[in-house]
Length: 190
Image 1 (cartoon, helix red, strand yellow):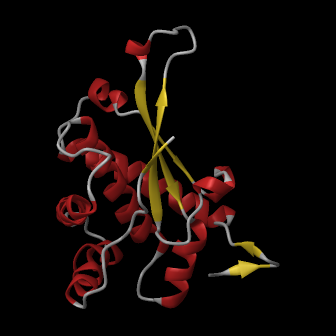
Image 2 (cartoon, rainbow, N blue to C red; image 1 turned 30 degrees about the vertical axis):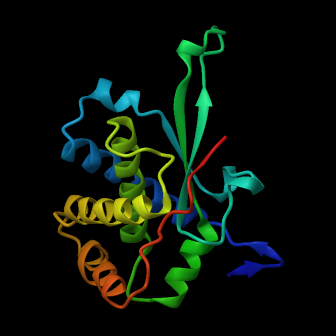
């Protein structure tokens, strides 16, 4: 892992600008792909956080990001029927920065675009009941492959050399070399 003075590295201010740009594009592309209206998109309750805002329990060294599911309810209600799922996409700055340091052919913007789009596809699939958040390990592997293919299709239309590399060559070569596509950690409910 990449550490500085015993602490996990975090995105710099300059890198955060690129992260924000990639997140905005990932949301737009995912919404367009699934033909989600603004009101449908609002029903997918989630937040996307970087290391700066993560608690220690939300940090992992195993993946670029992980989705955590929280059961929430409006503060004004005590009724169980008002509970809803709230997802946190926890970007792992230190794991992403280590990957960028290891492989100079990929850039921060394309990698974040891929990772966030991938996670948003999961959330859409959970919200449409196409996949359960609490899936068996065998189902998770199949789901990861489905989500990878959808993600590559969604971002593969972007005319940006780094995005093309991520969508096709980089991830396809990882797949064929037997390196698992474990971009996300095991999802957990809190």
